[in-house]
Image (cartoon, rainbow over all chains, first blue to last red; front, side):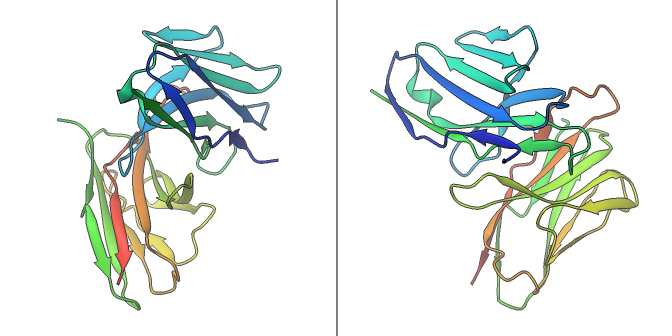
Length: 111
Length: 115
């Protein structure tokens, strides 16, 4: 089983739609979780950390389910500018380099 | 202002040549990482260093070498032994000293093409 798995997409949604991404991780000892955004041919940038209690930042909501070992990202009222690839990142203590990246989920928001 | 600087942004290499990618940071972070990204693929770890004068191989270290003589600098050399070096290379740092729950900061990347 891969350490961090994401649906690669692409997710093609109209403006204003709500879209959800899930990510599963294999190491139950993982401690920290993040969602990054990566635009085409650019470096990844932190979108939000994911806390056990869940957290919200404007239109974005992140949830963590430790029992089922998955994290989610919900985007409400999608904008054209949300089009990007969203990377799930997990800190698995003891793994090489500590941070494990998913391959990303591509989102395309259409007018 | 603080950040991570990668240079050059674009690099062209002839087959059989070694090239060195620069990564400099002024964030005072101990840990530095090199990742490779191929089109449509995730990030794969090449090498990482948690402290000066020490580094470890990642998942795809073959054909690459690094050094960590200074805290601020973690250059990556792509050697002629790397048979398919064309990719997007990303350098990152993490400040583990503050808390174990901390994000990675990335440089703007170097796009290497073999010609």
